[in-house]
Length: 364
Image (cartoon, rainbow, N blue to C red; front, side, top):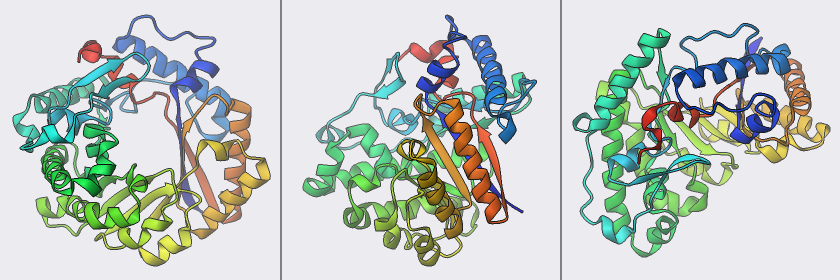
């Protein structure tokens, strides 16, 4: 039986409603409190969904999610390029947007010459010493994702009205990303395939994407090739929307190893237009609230079309444990119908919680 990976990520509100109602969040935010919450949630996942392999009956600390280097959520590249980050109790760091007109002359930044380089190295050392190993979730993004996090919605209009200024901004971003990739590849090898996160590509449409952004994504796709001479390989994230309108553009990128997009995407067309590409099917929240037979039908269709992974992210309080157990049962049955085995995993922590454990979290 071939494995079908099924990953689950819960919103903070899900934990508040279904776990912290009985065990309040820690009053003090530090590493010890984070560890206690991590272990408690691991046990809770086992109690609720242990039949599907989630959580652990006797959780222990080690080199799991608790040992993850993360910095500024989605905003390390914007921070390196001078964007000021502020703190909000509800969701942690967020960028203070800047007008495009004020970014004339913005220069790329090599993280190897920046204080963030030293911080990340220290954090890796700290986690390895404490837990015996670590991984990272440092977001490199893409030129379009990072441009949006720097100038906000102005980005989409400026692609049409001030393309020259946009191109200068994108050039600074792509070079800064290349420096970050080089640094992360040395610290957390092999960084292959190269990640490209196009969460907002659908907001500009396929024509504009192909005219302006595609060439930059092609350059990002070649980061590993530039460093080691390997053939280009990219892990392309289109976010939780159908990718159908972008397939012609994405097919022009060299070596797309995987595409992650909505499970409502025409997956057979993906396989036809991008040969050899694995497909990770994102199952959104509205679908988790469908009637069981409709949910079953769409999951079955995605698997039959060739999806090799299902991603159930941003699970919110409406998806109570009993409903989620039913959904996992449907997925397991649909996988078995095709001669496959569902392998479930669930994260006990939200990404921003890995940052609030540090004393400097509330310092902008």
